[in-house]
Length: 332
Image 1 (cartoon, rainbow, N blue to C red):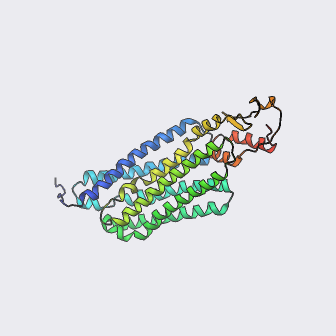
Image 2: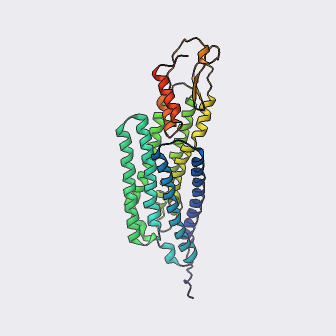
């Protein structure tokens, strides 16, 4: 049996090492994602069918990406070990990272665009984010096709530079815009109510996850442009899509904690608070339930903010009750 002739070159570590770490991080993040999806599944959230289809569809797409990446790991680090041609061959990378990865990122970004539309009621803002998401996806698909035709990772970096800049740069820009819009609209929704604690947590979560995905895309782009003859950029490239799906699942699974925060905001100064699936009001003077306290003030609820937590999707029944109470102007 003939074995590949070993190659002794100084750049072998920079060709194989980044791929190894990229695959390791990819497996780790898929494990985290599996745990999050399972936690979501057993939590029994009564989300819309479209949201459930999005979650499970993204999980299946990530499983496909992992299977393709596993094939590459075996071919490059196993069967083809010591063969330089195996190290520089794109294998299925052209499909798993720019094509599947950009489609996953676009799905997540379009979901956030829908949330921003729900908060702002602005078709222009939501459409603007969707256009950027579709632009980066188109560039990602173009990069994948060009990578497949090029069949050489080292010289490929010169060939696909323009579409790759649009793909990764557009993805990072979209994440930053989403985080900025969410920060603006959620901050504007603060009304000095106990629900502000929940809004603050949402703001922190949106900004942190947006910064994480944007930073990973920018890092991938910088490494791609700065080091044109090695595979350093492949470490963030292989795992980039997993960051998007894990960030999205953090938002969904964080609702249990948000519910605890909202329930803990029992007001002793005449504010509205929620416990489980009921909405209550208390007296500012006596702390007694609303039915035992004399009316003396009217306090509106930051409804649109609560709807954000609900439709991502905290208990829709809770929000419906709050809507009914707001229509009749809650007096405490």
